[in-house]
Length: 385
Image (tube, rainbow, N blue to C red):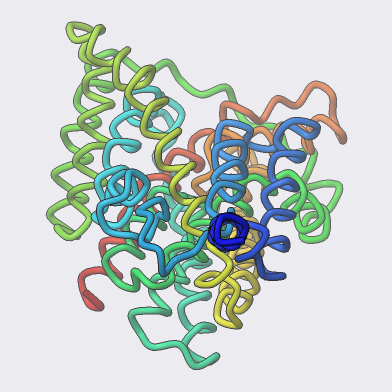
């Protein structure tokens, strides 16, 4: 009899440790979200390099366990492996390393050849400050509003870096929102691009960009760093690594370093960042009303950024001679979703004129958006941190 009781106690203890015994409805809701992310990545090819790590991370993060047992397996349990890996997000280590890789793979030639396109990238950052104002009106504290607003920059690493400084408790919601909407750029932007442009505007053909010299390419990251970092020193971790990576690429003498930065390094960090961000969405800490508000404001910020870029081009064209006018369809690419936003400009442009190739032109404001989002993050950190 004692043996049977002991066996019964052991089985009960085992059951108490299982995920089935500790599961709540929220865990299954989040697991469903993770499966949707994986589905979109595989079947629709929406940012698969991001959504698959995030989606699988959501599955891992929502395996229920007995938190009172101190098993040190959860991402929020100090000393656990996941918690150690998550420090790269919490402490802001991963985003600058991502920016190093982005700089090493980015060609700024389109922007250098047509500097006025930087204004389009700047206009799109209105999504950040528009979302900041909306978040304030919805009752968020200024630091929280700043973290939520950065979603409008359409730059996941920038959103994570900024939120880790301003509102760490919103990190999961902001990161998931930013990456979700980045992946959905092909769905969110086209309706507004068609709505805000006329057929005549969509047919505008822009001159082929001039050839940029190697000297200009080498000078650009140096001058870019000095101008932007002196303006917003608080953005130095992102801006410094972005321009450093670009100098590695363009110098012509550090090819091995550039290849490492844009290859194995950024791939490794992307895996760790995506997976740990996904795992941080434990239902017990993630499924809250403020997370829903973050998602809603994030969607609005993308819409505002897209519309602001397009409307700015339309207004700017009133000041330009006819032969130098900009096709408003590239206004959407002022967000920092490189190169997806520029590809959308190209795709929509080809629908109305199969000979009108906008990709090279759209890359100008697209890469300007990368710089712009980092500068905007520096501004927010400057007066909110």
